[in-house]
Length: 87
Image 1 (cartoon, rainbow, N blue to C red):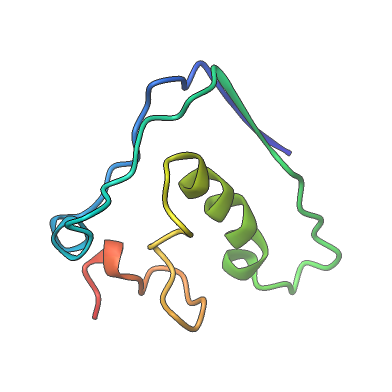
Image 2 (image 1 turned 30 degrees about the vertical axis):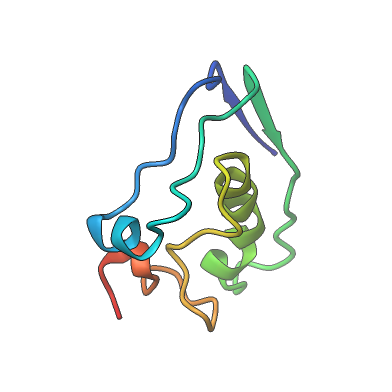
């Protein structure tokens, strides 16, 4: 389980490229003091860690007003999303 403590008012930092693409909606501040994220369970050491933790990142991005983590691309590959400067 991941807990972010004392985060009320924080905003998600996004790349200039993503900011440009999201001209209408640029997110908002987290509206609660503590953000408690659901746990994920790793069953084997061979699991795809970026894919396993995507729901955690999506939840944090959701708390900032975004649909999902833009650090993942359309195929859910981490580090290839528009927020990473990749096309």
